[in-house]
Length: 340
Image (cartoon, rainbow, N blue to C red; front, top):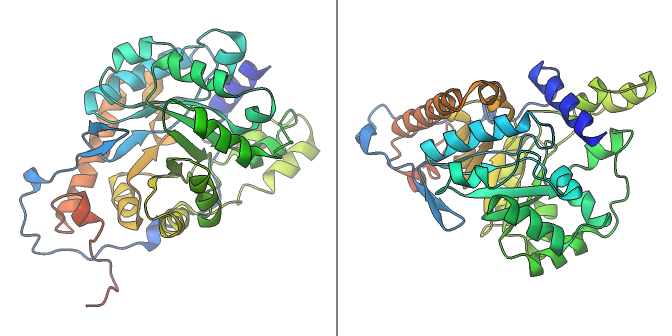
């Protein structure tokens, strides 16, 4: 049943039926154009470090899919392209692989195709109330030789999914316990409704190393579940929440203010390199993209690489046209309306 559900999720996203009605907020962010950049665009340094490894741009491919057999091909394309481009890859949920004691397309073959980049393992927070703990975390990490473990938060999706997990009591404490036993840094991410500054602060205080806001404006899992509903009532309940969540831009700024020293990933409806630049300016250390890459991931690693290089090229132009020689300068780039 879980594998069939994940196949349905993938189909709905690929058909373009999963868009949130929320705007990310990036369109409200306008850089002051630098008519005299006074820099050489070819020397702009987009490199940074993540999880102790050097990466070539402040981006990662966010978690997309896990479980169905075709995910093996998708993940292979993603891993090969991310290695070529030099950015991290976060895999989809490994729940099915852990429960079935297999790999479900999420095995060490990924690491063989991506030996140098950060790989991030992943399963849902709700599983911590259903028997998952340190042993399952170790299995997820070892399965792909991961550099970090993502615990994803999807309460809205679970709430509107007929077979969803509804008992979320005690999960903050469970995440805190897991952080104390995890051999790698713990990442907590939403899946499209955002994380507030207050919630992020609680997670960081519990030992979480990285926050991925995954704000509203991209894929709506309420829309996905409405698309696979079996009754009119189920569809109506889910559809009411297509506009639910904190816009990505708002979430990034709020979490950065609440957690000034945390590693922050901005994701959720990121369209292009200009959005990446805006997310960095708002406080993100890295910027994630998922649904925007899925069509390319179905085709080939070359298609994924072409997509990523295009986004990175757009980011480079945004840096040039703000006079930003590196990411530190971009974080301080002037916005329209800035004084002084």
